[in-house]
Length: 143
Image (tube, rainbow, N blue to C red):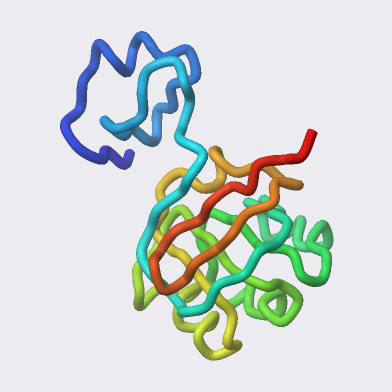
């Protein structure tokens, strides 16, 4: 479990969308997570694109060229996907994690160790990934 800030069990219990694996004191009860995701800068660069949440290596065929891969973490098995994506965002990781190192080698932006990217972001969302700042910002839809 990842706890960011001071754990408030009352706030956690009152959130109908609560997660048992992640808690952040800055997220208001009942609102789910914020629209922005923050993590560690993994690889510099800034790109706007479409999110593809893939949490299982067996489903990498769902990734289209230019997608922004959002996943829990990567390992050597994910390396063949890196040339197809425009950025990487992970829940787990740090600047020396597999995702960050390989993203730097391929010259694509990466934000790692976000904690909640796979639940806040949904496939099809348009986001701006800023690898130098360690931020992922949702672009409001025009609907």
